[in-house]
Image (tube, rainbow, N blue to C red; front, side, top):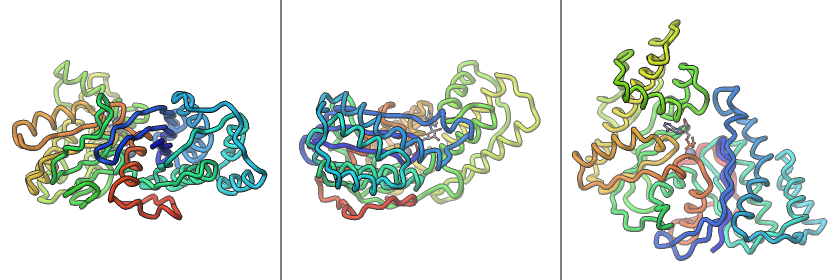
Length: 389
Ligand code: KG4
Ligand code: ZN
């Protein structure tokens, strides 16, 4: 099964070509082509993601990413696609709200033909709705050209599957034991999910204010570091640990003893704001703040997740979302679980699949299309910024 997958929920524009062999979760995959464009530079001046800028950037870069993925795959055919006048009118209608995208796609078709596509997987939510619509409309346009069905994908399910994807073996870890707990930590989400089986999700905890990635980004801004803040904070924190720098300020671990599985990160961010207010920080002090913040976040995530795992005697913990790229958090989880929950196996994604990408969308689309997991709403797909698992 040849899958084209599309991800435009936030500030990464991604298109992949993935060949899947078999049915989920016993399939093997070949990542034939992968186009991934980070919009970081376009958003840097705003210190965060600006939805209308994201929308415009997706429209500008989707066709270049399609070209990159298909060229890498060696499956691109260098002869024009047979498009009638009526086809072109339809494509223009489908892409009417996406500036320049219809022209770019019709131009692509004037020179190239896509191979036979079996499935188009597209993120339909959650995310920034104007950004999601670009991908959804593009998927519909590709469906018109190729005749392939479109399956809508939940971005968070994509993160879960990315975390259990074995990049060396190119397959999904089908021997996952249930019940499982998923901790999803990204720029927009912080959630604890109980999974009694594949595709069965019960949200048992979430942030009451900022998402953990958002907190990393905001604290980075307070420290004068560029967006996205997660990797920057984590780099400085590692330096502070190596140099054994003293604590800069005591920071709270919000809600750590609240007795439920919810999180709160805005108080932590505010505590950092007060601690650094009106001060000219030295490089060492900035590194110490980054480390103190990362320590506080890690302690909170670990405590709540450990409680969730104990509550269901989960045999598997799946950590996913952009923040799961953080190696300090990963090591803290791995060593804690090894001693406290030795029967629970912990999965973090390969670094290349931790932050947003379209390979995870292909995996989730394939799962929905080939298993009993229902491909809900496949007929009239709409972007849904608040889509839940
Ligand atoms: O999943 P993702 O790529 O996009 C969303 O779906 O939101 O997550 C992006 C978030 C950003 O907030 C970014 O700062 C954070 O993930 N992030 C990190 C690291 N790498 C990315 N946070 C902490 N440490 C990292 N190494
Ligand atoms: Zn994400």
